[in-house]
Image 1 (cartoon, rainbow, N blue to C red):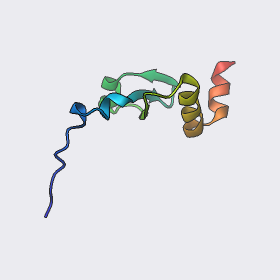
Image 2: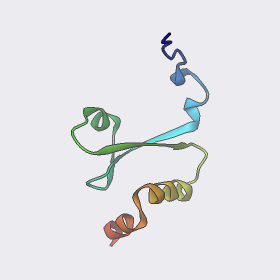
Image 3: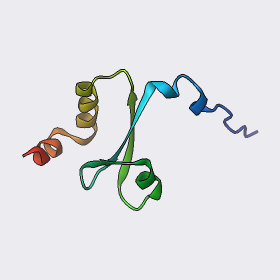
Length: 75
């Protein structure tokens, strides 16, 4: 028998321990939740631990999208 999920993550302490990023893959910039919900472009939602430093978050994005793309846009 199907049982729908009843846990509300918005009201738990787990939800407050996350950072959510919306990344436009094709244009290489961060955007907002509305653009992600619109689904007209290739926008990824990346969720990371809120306790991570900026360097650790950068490492997550490098692991997902690769170093070459990041370096290409920094020139």
